Image 1 (cartoon, rainbow, N blue to C red):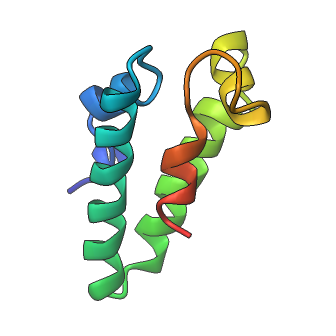
Image 2: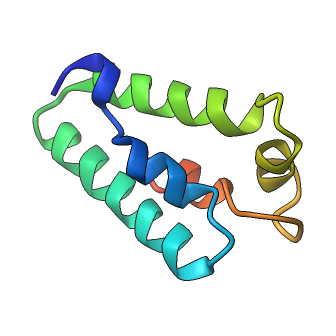
Length: 86
């Protein structure tokens, strides 16, 4: 798995989906990826995933993605995948 494709585009799309079930499935996929990397003691790739999620959602220029992290009661959910690696 190259650094550029740690998270597949389909997972990133599902994270911002309107449907809770899709967001939940994406969060569970992120969790599985992080668990697998943790078993391999690959802290660098785990950090890259966390940085990618923060960049895509917490500091996004798109208001829907920003709102997802700042206020879980609005719009779509970007906070669940960030909780998965913790």
